[in-house]
Amino acid sequence: MKCKTENMRTCLRFIAAAILMIGLSSAALIYATSRHYPADVLGYEDAGGSVYPVLPEDSKQYLRGLQLYGGTANVLADELRRWFDGLWHGKSLAFTVACITIFISSAIFYAADRLPAGPKPDAPRKNTSARGHNGE
Image 1 (cartoon, one colour):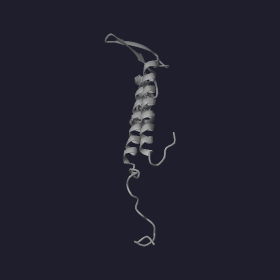
Image 2 (image 1 turned 120 degrees about the vertical axis):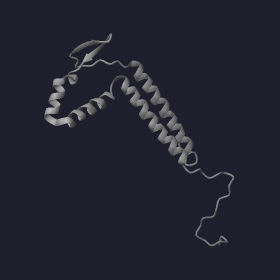
Image 3 (image 1 turned 90 degrees about the vertical axis):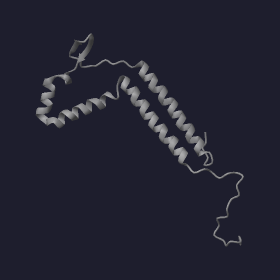
Image 4 (image 1 turned 135 degrees about the vertical axis):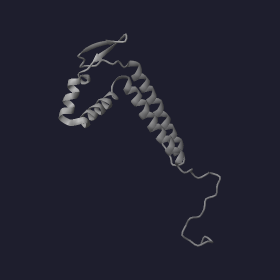
C-alpha cells in the first residue's frame, strides 16, 4: 500500500490499527500458551492450602550475602533485576507485549491526528510565487 501525502493520515491510522490487532492477538496467544516452570527450585512449601516454590533468591542466607557485599543498594538492585527479568517470561510477557503494543499504536494514532490536513480538491490554490501582486 503506497502512502501519498494526501492520504498519509489514513495510512498511519491503518498501520496503527494493524499494529494493535497483531500485537494484542500475539499477547493473547502468549497468555494462552504460557506456563511457569521455575528452573532453579530448591523445593516446595505448603502454606495455607497452596504449594509455593522455594527459590534460592528467597533464602535469608542469599539476602545476607547480597547485603554483606553490596549493602542495601545491592539488595534493591537484585530485586529490581529479578522483577525486570520476570517481565519477559510466561504470563507477564503477555501483559508486557500488550502494554507495548497499546503504547506504540496510541503514539501512531496521535501522530496521525496531528498531521496537517491535505489540500482540499475544491479549494482554489493561492499563488505563492515571488512575483508581484498582479501575477506579472
